[in-house]
Length: 340
Image 1 (cartoon, rainbow, N blue to C red):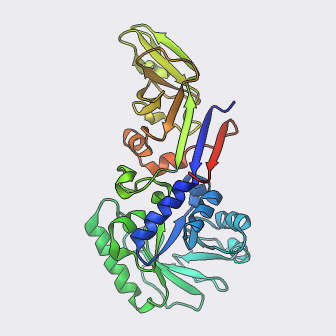
Image 2: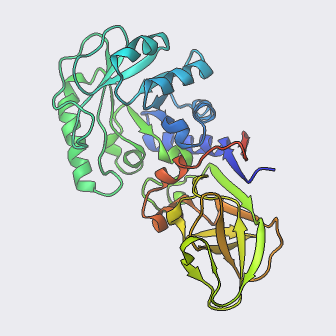
Image 3: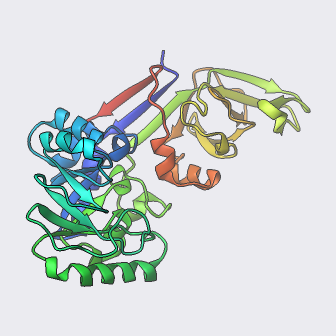
């Protein structure tokens, strides 16, 4: 029996893609499926996004692109957003990938996008060189579209000025937050990742932007016991019962991707929110119960009532990190729902 189950709702992916396409107006939607589709499965998500009229898929590395091309065959544009080494160029060309150039020489014989650093301070050219015949696009990347309007508007303006002479090429700048909040950033295409999965780029309720989370993670109570005052649960005795207290043990821990710093968050046990107490172990966590519940009671770790955004606030991180950190181990079942 699986210790937990991941469910990926491809209907939600398609619905989120349509929401983003509406926000983009006439610009194209490019679906970002790096990191195995933010932990949701790059091939399945990529297919669903294309069915919802995304026109390209974006990955971080050449190997990711080669795997996608093998699975999806001819058809979709596959754009590598990260740097490629010289050893990877032949494989990229054979797979029909488009590369991003952020430093150094522009390779010949395959389509490339020139990346301008407008304020991210990471990959990117200080100035755009004259494009060769292989250049098909120019791009940049937002540093803080989720939290700093003034700086984002400066990035938009710098990109606009720098790329005006190259308006005949495909210009793309906006990420999910940019698409949802900055109409001026749309240009010819928007590269949407986190919002495609129904997760908020702002750490808020995804429904605020018409998004539906596509991932649910569920388990069950494997043991239920009562602790007496002074008794504890978990390593380091970080939580000690002050009164007779029922606790439930869930067979999921930080090796599965339920991080150690999620102690104190809430999961849903038998339809009710319950606090995670004590130190989260490698393969188990403990929840405080109001009453004795039967072994096998369902537990929602991520899903309705236990959002990735709420967990991220407890852990002091972002929803991106939580979902990409969920491990697909053999003892976990994976359900892909196509009609959601």
